[in-house]
Each structure stands twice: as structure tokens, then as C-alpha cells.
Length: 296
Image (cartoon, rainbow, N blue to C red; front, side):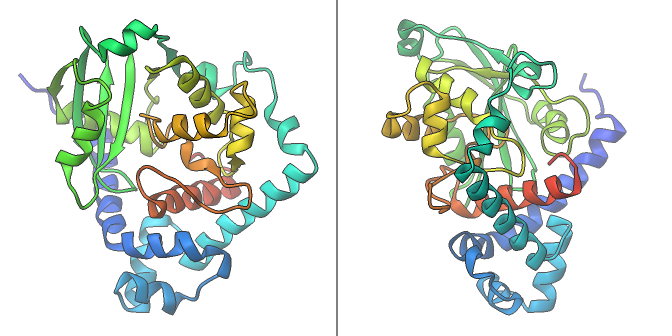
């Protein structure tokens, strides 16, 4: 027998579903903003990129983000300006290089680390039972992959649809036993995207250096960004720029392991597996939340 979802989950899903629809309507504009946010584009320009009237675009965008397009872009610019100032003064390293064993650290609170041997990597998930399902999110429809100990995959569905997103995830662990359960994914989504309930533990499954890079990404606070060089240094190999970039691109748990917060040293929003528009959307939402003292 399938149990009915709790009222809080139902309400949270309704809100996420609305945000997912709004995100889909704004995806072109967000792609456009990802390239031009430094220019502080006008409402008319952003609306034209979305194919909407300025009035309609302002209304849909504000409903999705909770702030106007102008405030949203200003928040991204503010976050980047702060990163540059702190990096120049070496404040960022001091702020982030804190004791990871502290009880307030995200690293300790919700990482279920599953280290793997080279043999485990070669087996590509053999003997592992994985549940997957689709759920709405503020950044479009999401695909969640759930391992016995927690969440091991989070992807997004674009124009290519669900099949492409699932193929991307399945290619990471092709020998696993896959089972679809949309209800399980939808029950987890409000905790992931809306802070309604306890976020699931994250299960990291990958090569050892990849896991080090994914852990390093968790050191970047909400509303902040860091360069790929910073991440390489935190992962223990400051000169491994290419390997670090590959590990960031291979991150299986987008959003929660915040590879979207890694940017080029000159501030460009480069190289996001799920699209630069989505990267700009995540950074903007987090910058707004950080300024309000909230959790994205």
C-alpha cells in the first residue's frame, strides 16, 4: 500500500512545482544573464531574451526568485566583488580554513563518506541498489538518485528530457541495480530545495581525488564563490588544475555539493555540467538568501 504524502511535503512540492514551471519559462533569460550579469542589463533587455513582455517577465521572475531581476543580478555582482576583495586580502582562506570537525560544519553534518578502491570504481556500482525518481525544483525538474545510506546523485532535466538526465546518471554506475520510485524522490525534494525537513546524508562514490575535490567544494559558504585554483589547493594539489576541473565536472550531486560556486579566477561563470544559466540561477538565489540571512 502506498502511503499518502504528509501535508508539509505536499505543500512543499506544490511550491517547487510552481518554481520549476517558472524556471522553464525563464531558462533562456538566465542563460543570457550568465554571460552579461556584469553589464547590469535592463529589465527590457532581460525580458526580450526570455521572449516575454517586461511586465510579464518581472512578475514571473519575482515569483520564482522572491526578488526583482535587478536585485537578483546585483546580488550576484555583490558576491563576486566580495570574493575578489577577500581573495586579494587572503581573507577568504582564513574564513574557510576552519576546523572541519566542528559541529556546525556542513562537511560533518551531512556527508556519509563511502570511500572506494580502484577495484570498486572498475565495478561501476555492481551489487549496489539505487533508487531514482523525478521531482520539481526551483531549477527545473530534478532527478534524484538514492543509495541505501543517502543521496548519491542529483541531476537536472533540460530540453533533452528525462532520458538524457537518467542516461548521464546511469553511466556513472552502470552495473548497479536501478529501481524507479518518484514518490521517494518527491518526498525528499522539499528538504533539499526548500529547507523543509532534514536534508539527506550525501553518499560520495568516486575516485579518491574526486572525493577530495567534492569535499573541498563544501568549504565554499552559501553566497560566496571560489576559484578553481582555490578548490585545487583545498583538495591537496594546488597545481592539479585540469584534474580538479575534471573532478568538479564529474560531481554527481549538483546543488548540494556546490560545484556551481567554483568560477574562473577572473569571475567568469564557466564550465557547469547542467548549464551556465542554471549556475547563474543558483548563485543568484544563494546570494539573495545570504544577504537575507537565510538558507537557500
